[in-house]
Length: 108
Image 1 (cartoon, rainbow, N blue to C red):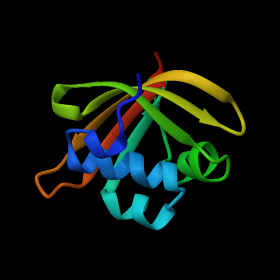
Image 2: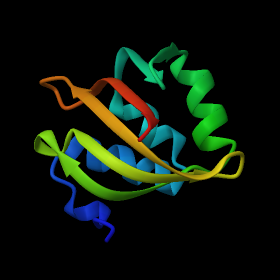
Image 3: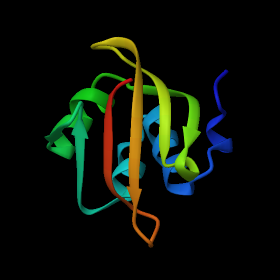
Image 4: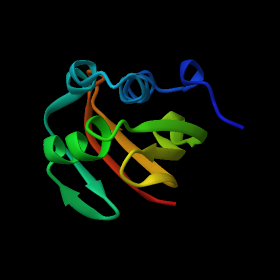
């Protein structure tokens, strides 16, 4: 059963999922701390290039199946126009100011 985005525990993660699902690049970028980093399947990637290719240009969408660690770890059915749907995990590091300084994703 999918968790409604509005019920996700962590406000920054909730805003991240909302921005991805709305394809709202401006809202997404506003959530990231300066110098934010990310990794995909254990390899660091350029945030701008990766998000353009894997989220915004390919119409990415997150359906959250479960959350843990206070809402900063998600198990997600992620889909986009390039790869279709896959089960993925997402982990977020959120700064004191509520902005995301790092996110990690990969197949679950």
